[in-house]
Image (cartoon, rainbow, N blue to C red; front, side):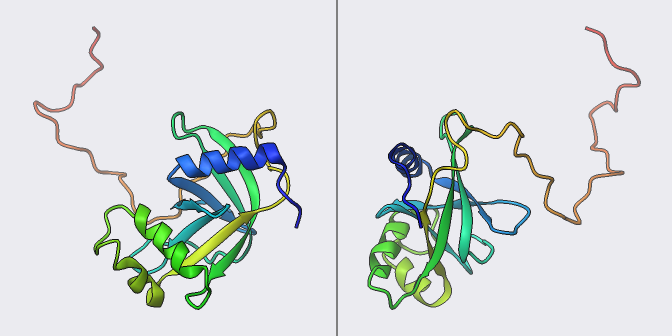
Length: 173
């Protein structure tokens, strides 16, 4: 794996440390998934599983897109390698503690989260490599918008009730 250039590494670290959300697109997947994360020890860490965010299996190559916290615009997209942090791994306690500290709206106390995650959740480390796919002065001109995920939800045929009915014609003001 090639090292991330210094300018890209600095932007990646700054954006990941300030943002609470990344977009992840595993290789071969048609869409990206939003995920809350923490920046820990030079990598993005995410947790998924029952009671946590639902993400596809993250193994191997993944694109990580970071957006500006202020404007929502794309800052940097990098190629990363996803590896699962096993509960037997010596880095697992530190990774779980970092994730637990930033977990919002937890059903249990942050101190109890690592014990719960040990048996049910998956902690994944995303380590960037190579030059950024997108970054300052080299953004894709496409919008990046994706069609909505398939769903059985629909609103066709339903019209909400309006006080005094719906106007027969547009009012001119």
